[in-house]
Length: 228
Length: 228
Image 1: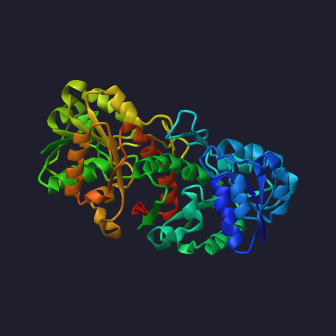
Image 2 (image 1 turned 180 degrees about the vertical axis):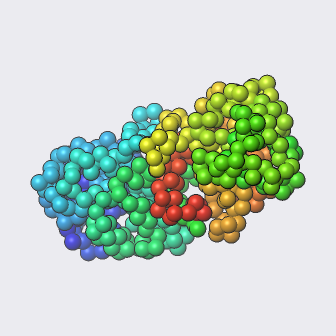
Image 3 (image 1 turned 90 degrees about the vertical axis):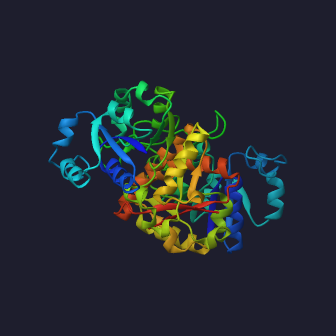
């Protein structure tokens, strides 16, 4: 399948490489294609230079947000919290019309250091803002509650047995996303469909606990498993 | 040990009964003692009439917030979110001076129905508001992340093997609270000390996810276990 991913950071790279390993074609969308491709410095989050990564992943193509949107049958938002709405505005509703958008973003605000707060929370969420701004897109919130190594390799902890919440307004879209997650190694019984996109408030608020557990554990390789 | 609990709802009752079963003496603090004792209707959360509960737990005494505070060597806040700061103001700093206060409260706002939002979150928390309002008290946030049957009987799910975050500024107070939690059946390896009281932001924000999982599972008998 052709998949368009908005963003070129750690999450976008991990997912792009995984998708390629599964036989999919991937185009990453970015604001300034030449600038991104030629980037030879680590990014703000400490990821290796993009140029270096791209050389190791030569089948991945890079384009504008609009080009990635037009390319993908399924789209993923792996842009930063503050970059997400601008990225989707640049992608444009024509290219995204009717498509599934897996929204991985978190509205993290690092302006006061670590741990970050959220720029939107409690009575609204970034997932809902995205859905409201692009009503023709089928937004499925997923993967925002864990670190990128675990997204693409759930077996890294507890034999893959831990919980992945998802939410979104379109049942068929969530079914298709679940199939894609299954192909990543996620068992259906560990995927927790919370309901409509307003549940992104809970999934994004979880980050306020996640970042503090990360600060305590000093590793992003942890997850939560719901037990009943 | 003598323990004073602020509140007379489901959380206060569950913990009071557990403490009595462990040999402790408990006084519940309430705004209007006579009114509470004579209450023969279910409370706002659907709990059985307090009068009925008290008859089954005759060793538990009931007093004003100030009387419960004076009685307890350790104090617990099991008041509602909106009732917590008023309860503690009524208890008074003289009676609470230097004591440990286990803060179980969540700043839930049900004014728009279920699921609730939070009245304070993200860049502050009720736990911090309580600590700031009563600097002589050693506030330890605990037990706010799960339902009251599980607080007092962790073995109800997954053989007791799930995670209980706590936080607070005083290391010795957290040690004493951990000992009390151990006596409730909580294993030390499942008690996760996140650090100072600002971590209550994460623990209280988790409720925004908890209430949605509760809505999905239709039972409060679930918990999360951190896996690494």
